[in-house]
Image (tube, rainbow, N blue to C red; front, top):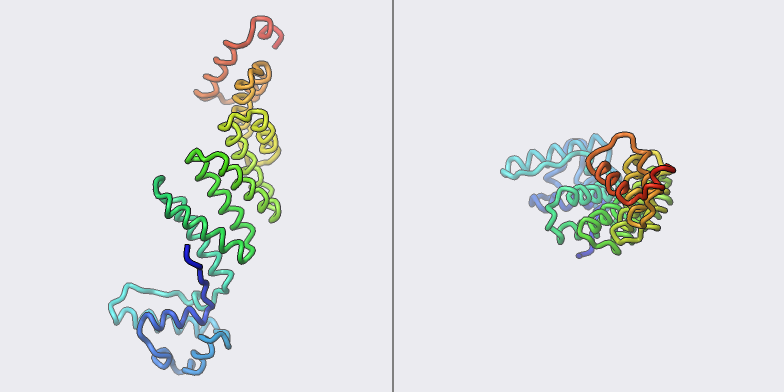
Length: 255
């Protein structure tokens, strides 16, 4: 992937002006001199919201006259470098969520870009979200070992940024990965960690824990865990029936 360049506010104006084939004096006005524009483009002067609004209107008018489908908002010349980076990362992550399942190149490219920028600008929340989303994508593609690595990275950054509730999502997804990898004891441990948070559905955790106990042939523990579920759907009833078949008559009597 090519190096990602984030432009300063002044550089953004210069880029737009050159794309439209304009000179600095073409954008100058009553309260906005060519010298002011030059200093702004060279990052030697900040711009006020009034002048930013004037510039955006002027640029949009010229673009319309040229028959171009182009519009720029005034805050484009106000936003800091960090704001632009955040917007770009969030745009990439949103594109990943909407991408087709088989569009691997675009998804991985966008995720890599978001991770790269978030690291460079120390945006811990976006970095955590990027690793989490990539972990989910790898999980869906059955790349379980890679998924664990990315969920672990996500957990690290969520913890570092104090996102306690989102830590629970990491634990829950890591538990499901370990279940798929048939590390059932480990899966149960992570389901327990997920259960300590508020946002995770406790009944869903109970189902997966019961399923893990069932795989370990711990049928009594599977049954007692499943009993925590009040609303029984089809998959829960099916698991309950499978557990019941494995329990001996004596075990059923003592439960």
